[in-house]
Image (cartoon, rainbow, N blue to C red):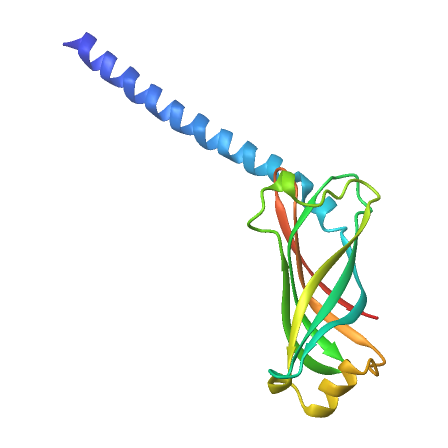
Length: 170
């Protein structure tokens, strides 16, 4: 009888030790995964240009090419999965846009190694129904003195991902 009680007690201790070891392992994985976060937060993003790509006069829409220059001043290699932004022309909101490679596996994305500077282009659709006629025509006639983008860039390394807010003008 005493041997059965000792065996049951040993089994409980073994189960508790396994749970504690598992929790410790999870803590180490979480800690290790967050080591890249300060390096990823060093990402720099700059709005370098907005160009009219095509105009649909029937539907009163225009496709603009928005170019962001993304720089990696850190030692950690990363990829950019999402750039979500609001685009402004001379202070007036044109709308929202998003560059996304979230559905592309990490090996298929642009790789930002240490010191890399890569321009990322995105197509932004501008509709006359979203802005006033004067602003729409100024964009088409390339009479806008400055564009501004504000938003969030998401960078990912093999172990972690961060979101960083940005605000940049041409």
